Length: 367
Image (cartoon, rainbow, N blue to C red; front, side, top):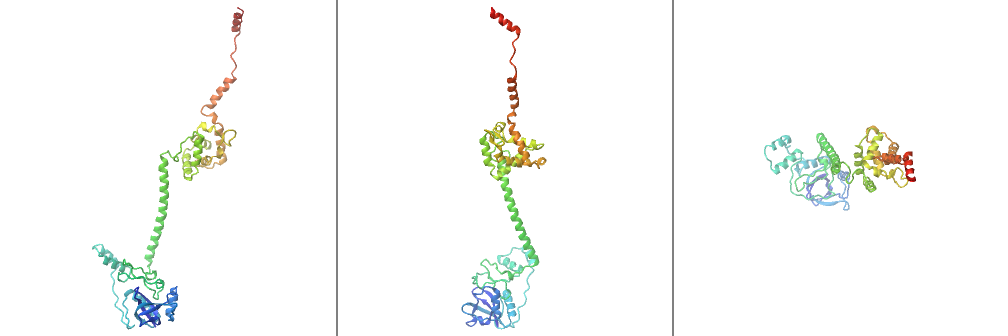
């Protein structure tokens, strides 16, 4: 024999074996040590004899007794819907099926007149086919009693103080349409999270760009062309920041050029003054600084290859043009003309003295 009982303390319903009842059916022994619902179902179906080690007693109210296990499970589901089972006889005529209003029309009519809070709660329960229950506070059942995922009478979660029902997932099956809606909502949430991350990255870039646009598109603290070795060292420290280096590459790539030589020379002329370029050569030979050791070389490589016409240029080709540009720094800004003028003045012959002047000079000496 089996019994459908209601746990008085928590207001939940479950199917138990009749030999679990005690004290004139006012107490029920429940296997609190069993961890899985399948184990509890097996114990109920076999009417397992309760032991003091694995079972604890709880106050109960017997709703119905039956000899069939499957029928008892059906009565548990009926009790969940109506809470109206008879305790005396199993053959009681079932109550009439109540006609529930169509929730679609109920929602339409709610827009015409204002609903009270109680009516709104009842309407929401009707939409999800949930029976109206008391909204008074009910203590939470013991953790060992709350089991979900079994149709054999796992206990129902009671209503919360706010009146909303916290039913196990197995008692609120979703239709195909509801599953589709939930899938669409979950997908929308994922897309919104991705868009939020992209928006944050864009805002960060915009904030950097707004600060740097005030300086002509250059990173903050940089002014071209560089005039002193100190300025070069400060720039080297600045380009260690990836964002600043990327911004500098973008700025220099906009200079452009007709071909590879023109592009490299225009970038170098933008970065260094000619007087500063005279203090460098490629490997630092003699008293000059080594240009090949600067991080700016890598920046120039990347900026040059941003030009679509020279995108395939190699580092060696770019470096060769840089070497020549540094080598001939002394010839630019009129340096070659000044050097040629000095050379011509050194190589020009001394003015010759005419014989007539010599004779006049000699005759004057004689006099």
